[in-house]
Length: 200
Ligand code: ADP
Ligand code: MG
Image 1 (cartoon, helix red, strand yellow):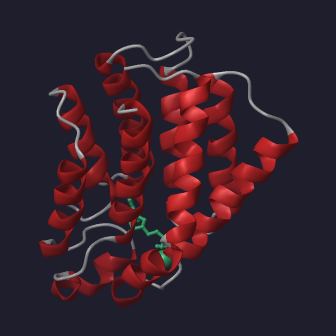
Image 2 (cartoon, protein in one colour):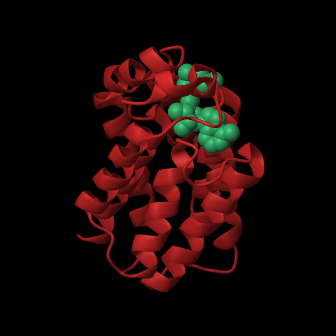
């Protein structure tokens, strides 16, 4: 397993494609339990990242994650912008002393630092029906060296039966049950995209 600046950029490019392809789906997930903008929010973030990337191609892992973090924070309206921004910032800090990520253990540390960033920013815990549920499951799967598409899907779908404790969906109480959390769904796309580069 190896993640250099080349694989990291391939990962984020694949994430851009997945967000664009699933923009309507993500907004549809956000409609019954939110305000229907999650796909548009994320699309603005990845577009901003791609524009920054075209202007100046980041040369290091940390620069790459800094650029996407800033794009998410500045261009994504909505709760998810600062949360993803904090995730990428946390990952950037974890990679500060690495030229490349060379083992699953190191990758676990990096994703775990991203999860810590989200939790510090949003104060959600596992089971609150947010993106934290997927990030946390991915950290556990990586730690066991068992990250698969099925594992990611299971974590995303597990949010369906939960009552939301954070974000807009928390206003709905029990009525949120039966709906997948949109931020969990976009995070699932992030990690499915990661799989395409680390399995290659
Ligand atoms: P908004 O809710 O402002 O419209 P989005 O629709 O873009 O923002 O994002 C909603 C997603 O953000 C939710 O599905 C959830 O995964 C995530 N989210 C909201 N609040 C929190 C929080 N406090 N901690 C973690 N994730 C959260
Ligand atoms: Mg929304």
